[in-house]
Length: 498
Image 1 (spheres, rainbow, N blue to C red):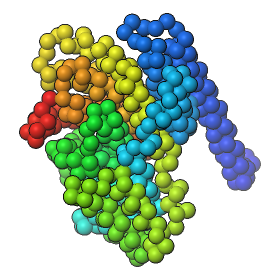
Image 2 (image 1 turned 180 degrees about the vertical axis):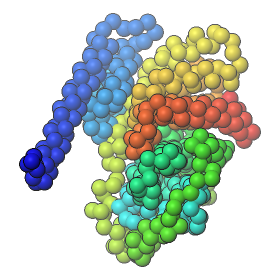
Image 3 (image 1 turned 45 degrees about the vertical axis):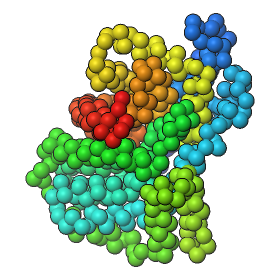
Image 4 (image 1 turned 45 degrees about the horizontal axis):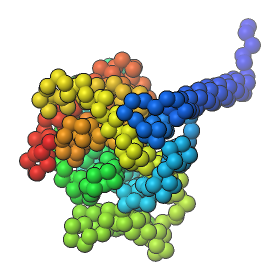
């Protein structure tokens, strides 16, 4: 008779294996970071110390080197976000000779303060039960076991909190809620329809819906903030919170299209989740009664949204409103514990945001952007295509380069200044051109690694990479066509023609 292995030994073996795997992953990440740094600094030194390229000045070429350093470091995750945000303008000072006040310019702008306040407000939603409570409350209103109705309820909850949550935070909030609903089908995971339901819920709720909502609200998507900041710094165009909402109004039409596509692709129209009607209210009840800090949080967020919407009457800029709201949240009578909220505030991303906007401004000011734009646009301009057709060619060509950039901040930093330069080269109105093109690059689902929220959702769903590519590519094409055709027409209608 074989001797049984003691359960304790088996448990210890599993723990040791997990520790070994974690150590191997850490070593691999360090190796990747080291290779990334070598590539990044090689590009920087090559451009700074190498011969000046035709059409560039030494200063312009050095800033281009810093830009390539930034992209290489971000793509390989070679350094922490906050360090990248501080180091980028520092390298511009050291290698291009710009004054610190110019190189770090974005850190004193209204758009940077808007990001700071928005991240604090988002921390309230994550650091208190408020975000989950709103989500589950809306879902319970659907009162149905139908997958499509539950998905719609989750989508409405996504939209409700999307005005104050950045995309990645929204994903983090809805991932556990979605997985909790998925556990109602435990034991039936092998059934084809259950696999479709779980995959659809995880790809859509924490992945797609935050991304489709993010383009609609200025503070909900990092490229939005970067574009608003760069247009202000480079072109003197100020876009308020309500201006952004108005300019992107037709993109609300993409939400029902996305829902229809998901329901149809995964054949969800007649499927049900057993026990959902009872389980979802139970999840809500687990949160307990609404507390005073949550009520105070809602009051402050309501004040902030009201001030953003009415900016044209009181004249207080969006960044100052965000800081005022963040300050109100922590008044003593609100009883909100800063320690609980602080760990959910993305301070590192805020610094990265400031650094990326500063770098983009430097690229434009020294002429590097116009040089890059002329080399990209030149061959396409020579084809003599109509403007809309040329935008289609440019967008889908840029999606190839955009595919490897997971970070939304890195995407914005890399492409927004370039798009403004392209608008100059093509003699087009900078605001509609850059807005449409940036929005197109935000709907990037050709690869599951192309955008953070979709990457997280795909990883949680367990779907194969090929399945995610098939599903995402069709949706990307639909979304990009819609943005170029519909939003361009809308912007022309409201006074912003190309």
